[in-house]
Amino acid sequence: MSRKTTKSGKRTFQPGSKKAERYIQPSILLALKEGSTYGYELIQEISKFGFVEGQAPPGMIYRHLRDLEENGLVVSEWETQDSGPAKRNYNLTDEGQEVLLFWIDYMQNQAEKLLGFIEIYQRIKTEADLKRQTREPVKNSPLK
Amino acid sequence: MSRKTTKSGKRTFQPGSKKAERYIQPSILLALKEGSTYGYELIQEISKFGFVEGQAPPGMIYRHLRDLEENGLVVSEWETQDSGPAKRNYNLTDEGQEVLLFWIDYMQNQAEKLLGFIEIYQRIKTEADLKRQTREPVKNSPLK
DNA sequence: AATATATATGTACTTGAAGGATATATGTCA
DNA sequence: TGACATATATCCTTCAAGTACATATATATT
Image (cartoon, rainbow over all chains, first blue to last red; front, side):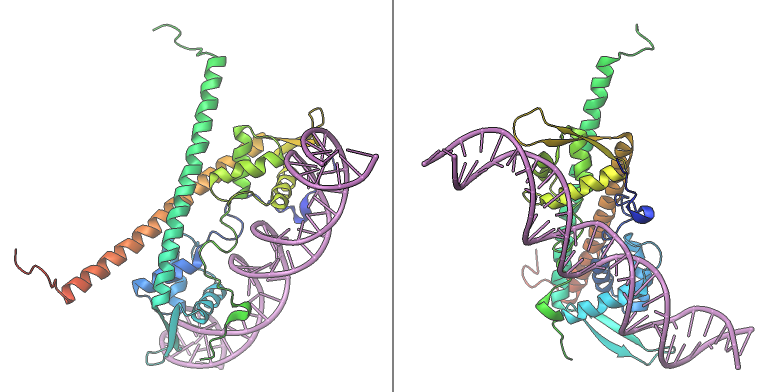
């Protein structure tokens, strides 16, 4: 019966509190398709897609950008003309566009699954409610 | 320019090929709410929600079940009367029901975000297409 | 009676993305 | 001059997913 409290009481099930589900890579790709340019700006921009709260952690963004460039989905070049520190401007490659399309397809699919799941839940709930009603009939207004 | 091919050529961006997004915990909870009982049955049942392909890996299911019980979302008891090896029957607790509700809420939210993301993508794409049209006007059927 | 197979549960190890901490550099403004 | 905003980058830890493996029992087959 030892009810082990998994050290530090982590609750593995908390929806959304865990990892993943943040769609940072497609968010970066879409922001770049929109015309955004460099990392620091992306940190603020991608929050509008709703998958990350507030400011995205810089470490993640720059890591993703490097990964994306390593894989040929984006290209970058330094921009020094402006005032302030130099920025590295990013642009989508053709392959990046394709991958974004794959993401869109995947996300469409995922959205359908999620809605299907919710539907099943609601069906079961309705059935359970109906059964409850037949067992304990309405108390108020027994006659019209 | 060194185009490092991240050892073993992993492509971090492949949509869906990565981790997460499999919603195994809510799938188990929903299957239990539907009336499924024990692990082996769940392995087959949860595939119908679409988040896992074919048979779910047993190791994952049993690990999840243990986690869920540690956290009080399910309770279990051995059933030995039937034929075949003993099974461990699971039931949702009230807390389990609540957490499933949280999941539903989260998934609803996630689905909306996904659809919103797709909308933005399509808007941008349409805009780009329109611009392309104005730059290079239609070649065929110039007059009605 | 031995063996194979289906049922059923469980443990252990590996990996990799997320998350966060930290470092560096430059220009602005008070 | 020294604090602050801008801008990029690296390193380290965590922890759930994933996978491989181990165990046990009942039934069917030869």
